[in-house]
Each structure stands twice: as structure tokens, then as C-alpha cells.
Image 1 (cartoon, rainbow, N blue to C red):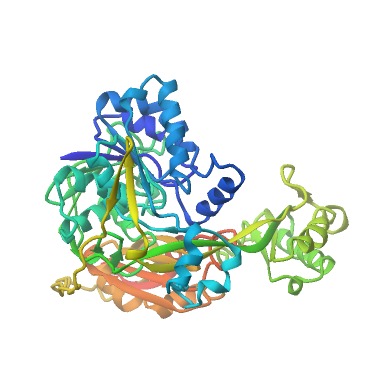
Image 2 (cartoon, rainbow, N blue to C red; image 1 turned 135 degrees about the vertical axis):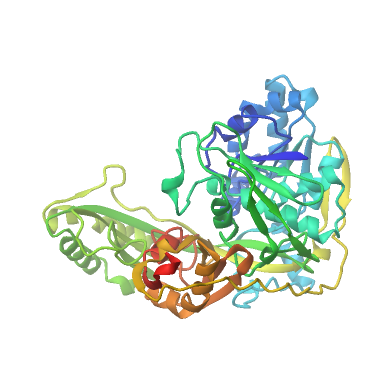
Amino acid sequence: MIVIANCGGFWGDDPTAARRQVEGGPIDYLVMDYLAEVTMAILQKQRQKDAAAGYARDFLVQLRDVLPQCVERGIRIISNAGGVNPLACRAAVEKLATVLGVRDKVKVGVILGDDIFGDLDALLGKGEPLAHMETGAPLSTVRKDVLSANVYLGAAPVAKALEMGANVVIAGRVTDTSVTLAPMIHEFGWKLDDWDRLAAGVVAGHIIECGTQCTGGNFTDWKLVPTFRDIGYPLVEANADGTFTVTKHPNTGGLVSVHTVSEQLVYEMGSPTYVAPDCIARFDTIRLAPDGKDRVRVSGIRGEPAPEKLKVSISFAQGYRAFGRLMVSGPDALAKARAVASAFWESVGGTGAYEDAITQIVGWDSCHPPLASEEPSEVLLQVAVRDRDERKIADRFAPQLVPKVLSTVPGITYLSDQGRPRPSDVVGYWPALISRERVPVRVEVLGRTAEVAPPPRVRAVRVPLPPEPPPTLVLAGRKRRVPLSRLCLARSGDKGDTANIGVIGRSAAIYAWMIDELTPEFVKRRFEGICRGEVERFEVGNLRALNFLLHESLGGGGTLSLLLDAQGKTYAQYLLAAEVEADEALL
């Protein structure tokens, strides 16, 4: 068995997490994830200004706390902190190791090949259209505006770096799950066509990749969490047969249960056939079982051969956006806020003068339609625009907001730390696919270089799963109207302009009810005015879950959206607040 400890779910997560994971108990690997689509564009811009930049500098902050302890105890560190400049990140780590007096004990491995930004024209010339995965448009339509282009690599090169002796592995755009799967491949000698075991590693990585979201954070039943103080980051106790246990260090805050793990499994999920570079993991085969206090055992996972192509994350410049906010107090806070908004838009040429414009009343309807009928005592008025003309935003939109404090309603003020809105760059997201043969991957460790071959090509044959046994359901015959949260848990996330909401039944009987009642049409009605596209539904009976994809529901996606909740983080809670009619036996 090996113990893999996650210490971060995103760039900006708790900087003390690495130290707490190392000091909290025995671990073998410390893994951390820093990258998102917009992050790659930011790092690419940094590298263009400074050849020594382009990686996640927070990585060094965490390493300063733990590097001496890790090399002393034999704990290996794996991260995608390399961003778009893994070599510069390596140099910074080696310099830090010298300062900490452990340079002779630190063996840094670097994964190279994911950054294809400089090769785009050559790839297009060789017949790789890099077409948008959703619209089918060729990359040539935005080529001049591209800011970054990175291929999602899998765990194989990371495992190769470990095999070559690295105890600190720095990657660029490997998938979030790869940093967890790679130690399993290395330690257990898994073959790159052992699809079931690889799938287990992918599932383990998906569970812990977002840090505390599987240990009680962002949990529907948050009142069951004993304390959020010193919340424990997740650990995976992995076995050679592909089974593993999710837990956390003792005497830490948070909660690990079948429900906390289930919610994370449906987070940012699409179809239950979860596609990773190393294999396809069948989320509809996962089995969860309690395994003691704050312990959940995961087993039964099946996998299928790796996809023929790799995903590419491309970012491109798409104009500018700006946000302005004013605080409006009661009485009549809503009426006042609407009057201020009307006066403001009239003074800047109207909402139609910009490519996109929006008004949101924070505290009332900014994340989703109102949940209550009683008016709040104060609200935050937010106005926002997006346009390719930066001067239009700076000269017309921005100067007119603060003056409304003196020229409209009483009981209004501006935020002292904001003042006049300022235009900022908008980064568009372009997902594409590329042939594996076009992406040579290599690993460097202590001056030695190794090429990493793609996984073997195998024709995928989907094995049908036995149907879930129908629940024994005895109805009371009396129905009650209750909030959906009485019956279900849920978590929501985002992929571009599509939000996902995974809904989990609290019992097998409730899941049977969900199949009949929680239809795509039900969800579409609930999100009227928010979801502009279709709603898809996937059944995941082994988790008692339905996963809904709400297309065109995030204002274009997190990198360019004007919505306050551009990643759909609140959508699950809004769905759970819906009143439904259910038989009393289900309650």
C-alpha cells in the first residue's frame, strides 16, 4: 500500500496545506494541482514578458515549508506547477533546494511536450485543424489571437520520471488526475494497457484533485461536518489491485463519508464514461463503502482503452470586460437598485452599445433567481460589460458609475476598495483534439532524457454492465411537498459554457423516484432564463446519481462570462431548493 496526499485543488488554495499533510502523519507522495484553462493564458503572458516566468510561484512557497522534511522521509512530490515553463520552475526549485541545504538530495524531473504554442502553424500545415470540440470551427478563425496552447498529457511521463529517480516531478499541462495515477503505475508496476487498474487511479485522482471538496468542503449536508477548522486535506491509501481508501489525517476538521466522496465524483462530470489520456474510466462501475471513521473504500472500477486523440486547451484574446458595483440600502432596496441601473445604462449608451452587458443584484438574483419573497435590507448592484473596444469601456462605461451615488437614489454608496471600473483582458477558451503522434513527450532527470511512447492502440469494446437491481419500494400513498434537498444531495461545476449538476439520491428508493421525476425538462424549467441550451441527463445507478449537463448556461464560460457565478458553483443549491411532491415513504 502507498499513501498519496493531496495538498491543493487550485492555484490559490491554502498555502499551509502541504506542511499540514507532511506533518500530519505518514505519507509516500505529496501531489498538488495548480492549473486551469485561464491560468495557462496568464502564465504564457508572464513568460512573454520574462523568460524566467510562466510557472506557479506559489509552488515554491509550499516547498519552502516541506522540502527538507520530504527528502529526509523519502516523500516524493509531484505537481503541474511548471505551467508553460517547467524548465524555469526546475531552476527555481533547485535554487531553493540550495538555500535550504538539501540540493544534493533533490532530484528534479521535468515533463516536456505539452506546450504546442510555438508549433501551432506547423501543426495546422500538417492537417491538424484543431477544430473547436463543440462548434467545429477551425482554429484558423482565431489563430492571430491565440495566447496559449497546451495538450493534456497523462500519467505515463510522470511515472517515467519517478522510474528515472526523480523525487520532485514538475509537469506542465498534465491532467489533474495524472499526478495521483502516476505513483500507482510506478509503485505497483501497472502496465499501460491494464485498463481497469489505470481507471482506478483516474478515479482516485478525480476524487482528491479538488482538495477538501471530498473531505467535507462544499458539501450539501454541511451541518453534519463537525468543524471546518483545520479541515483535513484528502489522502488515498492505494493498493496494487486497484482498490483504495479515501481518508484524511486524524484530529483534523472536515468529514469523509460515502456522501462527501459521491458528491466529488459527480463534480464536473459529463458522461459516466470519463475520458482521460491514459484510459476511459467507467464511473458507472464505482463501488463505495464506509470503512470506519472518516474512511471510504472504493472498488469495482472498470476501464476501457485510451482514446485515440488527446485534448488541447487553447486560450485566445477575446476583448475586454469590466465590472462596477454600488451598495444600495433599504427601505425599497430593490426598487432603488433598479432605478440606479436604469439611470446608469441610459448614461452609457444602453446595454445594446456593447457586445455583452448585464445587471445583477447581489443578495437577490445574482447567482440564480430569488429563493425568497421578502426583500433584503441591502443589496449590491453589479453592472458589467464585455467588448473588443477597450476605449469604449474605459471612456464611456467606467466614468459613469460612481457619479450615480450623488445623482440618483438615497442610501447608496460605492465600495471604498473599488471606485471606477477598470477594463481587464478577456480570455476565450478553445477546446480541441490532436493526434497523439503529433505530440512528442520527453522526460528530463539529472541530465538524462527519455522519450515516452503513447499507450498501445486497442479497439475499445464496451462490456455491458449488469443492470442495477430495482429497489424494494413500499409507498405510503400520502404525498407531501418538500424541498428536493430532503431527498437528494447535489454538487455543480463547469466545463466551458456548460454547467453540470450531479444529483444523488439519499436512498435506492429515492433514486428510483428521481429517474421518473427529475427529467431534463424539470431542470430546464428550473433554470429558465439561465440555461439557454439543451439539458442532457446521464444515469449513474451505482452512485444513485443523475448527472445533468446544462448547455449554454454560464454566460460563455468562466474566462469571459459577466455572471457573478461564472462556474455554476451555486446551481446545485438552487436546484435542491426546488419544491417537489413525494410519497411520505421516501421521507
